[in-house]
Length: 122
Length: 302
Image 1: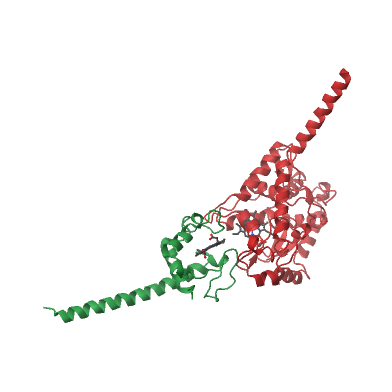
Image 2 (image 1 turned 120 degrees about the horizontal axis):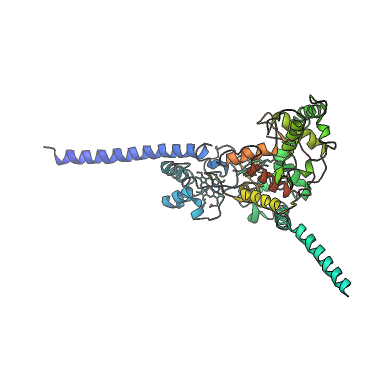
């Protein structure tokens, strides 16, 4: 028989470890997102965007806006924006890299995680 | 009385023919004027017109790095026309222009007799001809590029054609370009099929292509005067004046078509073949848009 106390302890432990795992995997996701952002054969987002809070990205272009305060947007909006920017801005110069299968859904999740973690509004 | 009437009819017939003849380039002229106008306005005062044309370029950069106002002929400098850091960097590189040796080679090739004793001069007695290429040959019913003209000269003289885009062919073209410096681009649209070829080229220029769904227009019109990473994007106006170019990336000369093919590929499409119909049509359209601009090729590029 497991005591209530022990059960509680297990429950708490597992709750903590889930959080820990979540934090760790989010950190991995953020890291992956940055890589997608700066890698030419992946997102290549730096061709057009500078990123607030990440000045170490070299030689960003200025066709698109400097990405800032993106934690203010819902995740789904950012996902959509990257999946197919033509939906929000019909004539945009930004390529639909999700829709055209240049990057995967998972990579877009990673980009969103990276952008929200990095471009925090004050 | 009757005589008078016939005269009127005859005159009106003549004038109709003239109007018709002029009509083949009516649309192209309309396009070209709008094109030139857009670029002149865009680069008249980027600081004052930032909201309209350069919303995401930091004001500091506009003030420090942009050269303006740009006049029509200034667009001959391509990506160097508006971006001071590039212009200064290349002015230094061109102290000893890397294209000089290939141009000398081109001159030598031009004057070296073929096996039959003749030279290129038998086809090009006046080498200052680049301003008229590519042209629409109404008899052959196709666009003839300067590279084709060079190779056809070889073939009628019993020589093998050269590989397009680079190498010896680009060297001979570069020599012709030097001889044509200062001549104004003069592309004509002589008949209906030529007008169709122009329209086909125009369509390619504006078509979103490849997995990036991006067009020539987006990078070289809408985004001209902005940077994609560290590269200053060249305005499509004047894009052909400085060809062929010596590119440091290539370590040698390349023709207009080599450049165009590279850009098509970079947008995520299949790389088109040299002298293929679409590539020639694109070149025809693009060169027409710079009509009236003085040639000054070759030049040096990244």
